[in-house]
Image (cartoon, rainbow, N blue to C red; front, side):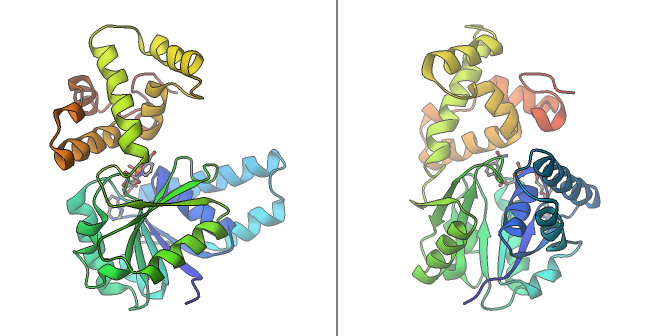
Length: 283
Ligand code: NAI
């Protein structure tokens, strides 16, 4: 099967990046969000990113124009009818994702593959909301998508080999590196990363050191390019909390309990960079 027409659901930080990466690789992309404002912001974000790439001489003006030419926006999920492949990047919430997949299953053509960019939720459960579980798969991009090379490809219980191979091929076409991962809570990346971030939040909560000093320790002491609290702000504290809850529920092990301070910040609306405040303040 040739995959050319792609639809991305959710135009937030991940969805916009996923749409951009596919358009840059030559796919025709439709970007959808239920919020007009988010869709507009996502489009603006892509335009700005590409303009900056031209300034830095990473891409040519022609490549930028060709990319934007391949990218269109959509205000309805019904447009999935013209897609060979749909990638969902809406909020990290199982009920919302299941509803989106139910609708996609109804609108997308029979041959279409449906992927989720979930950071931690079970692909098997998302797939069960559809009548095509063998064509449902996890495609976990890293943030920021246009730069980060890794894609964790998660096989649900019923994902077929054909579906896996098609997604592996697309990942290579995006010039990224696929890694096959089984469907367990947090997959590999977040199972290892999130408990570290959560522990850094506990260190703030217990007054062990300031966020800046904790980040400095991890950068200079353990050679991380970015401290865990800066990274948490960058990922989004709501997303971090949700992933910790998925690990906690999924393994039933108290070592994954989310730090109360993380909950408090999320309740306050301090979601990190995207809301202007998290462990640090942003303009
Ligand atoms: P975000 O909050 O920036 O964007 C989510 C977007 O989805 C919003 O624009 C919202 O309006 C839209 N949305 C919500 N419900 C919708 C629906 N029913 N239909 C259409 N649009 C809907 O979130 P972000 O950070 O982009 O995360 C999206 C997904 O990507 C989550 O599953 C997250 O776990 C995953 N992810 C996030 C990473 C990160 O670093 N932030 C890294 C890898 C995966």
